[in-house]
Image (tube, rainbow, N blue to C red):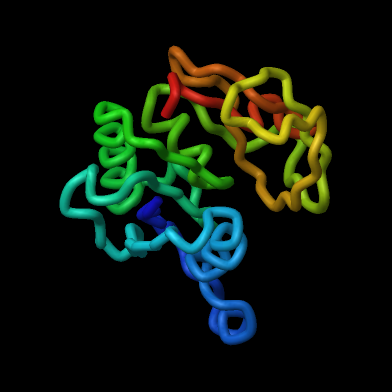
Length: 179
């Protein structure tokens, strides 16, 4: 089965590490390519630079990367990305947000994102699943991920279902309907 995943790149890795490890989009292809199989294709959209899919159904799903920016920054590209996230949601397009991307989905759909009262969360953090969804397989009670952020989702959007929490982040993962 062919699957086309659109990577909405919200930032770029600095030049020196980019030469060694690639840009954010390349890192996600490396991380996801094997899991998605040989039928997976990736399209890249530099949303910070104004490049977007022509239509929301151009890809089977989308991944919004991390960024040094904050979703509440007053930047035209951030406002445009929030509008596109609302279009994706209205179309029930499968969308995943990582770090800034997670925060952008919450922000665009009416949740609240703010700077964490406790400051930066940096290092390997333990995340606990608090809900079970059929697509969360294999089922893990806890998993560990590298974290580096000061912003977090403080209030989920209406209709969101909390999936994971951590000691640092009370709304670490959520879903909306089945997309």
